[in-house]
Image 1 (tube, rainbow, N blue to C red):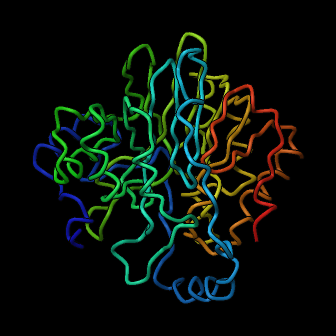
Image 2 (cartoon, rainbow, N blue to C red):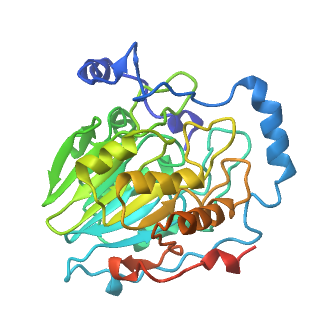
Length: 349
């Protein structure tokens, strides 16, 4: 794919007209609920490069992390109990009410395809996973950053999936890459859709979006709440700590399960990613019965040891008495499995 194609599409006139109806669209960009520092300045770049270099040998596993091959016979939907598979970073296959939902399907091997230096995935041959997936009923995109929205993955998935639910502003990228917009539903914060008996709500997070130097905050970012007659699940999306976790918990909780961001944090962007201790607090705020950490185990996007997120997450959970579950890559899990200890990362350097 060409470098130009990676950026997606520029903002269109019809996008701007649509965005004007959003309460968070002001001065030609979307805004967080609270004032938010978006990241580090150029003045911090030397320090970040130094931090990255000083721990370069421990930011990634020494060997590729294995992903268990998909077992379709274990993923049948006869019992309609929720199941999920985590493929590292934020890629989730969720089965709910008998429907298969794929969230942030970034199966590519590089999280920075526009950069001169590759951000290599911790696992090998992940694009091949797409060929093994069951029939996907819907794809959800939380926001348009490269580690969540991957051109090559999308190109491969477009012929396979009819329904796409995405953050406001993401449709223009998908359309440019070949997806007919009649298959796309864009969502603003708090928008709700009924998908085959699953009520899906797009919820706020404290983050940002954009794929280039000139489109920052010209698409939205957030998470998802899933509600059925029997279960409620929350996916936090990317973003730092704020009052929205409590608000979401008050509106839709308690949650049987919460997938919470945990990883790629750094002192120079403390408001746009959760530190592991904040991930636990977010779960407490949201009234989550069980927390599952995501946004780790896939890419090194910040200067910390690749195991640091999960080690701190586990420790903080013990201190707060919060139930957690730490799935290994590619395995199929149900709510019945969530009490099983699974410190799989201890077997990898």
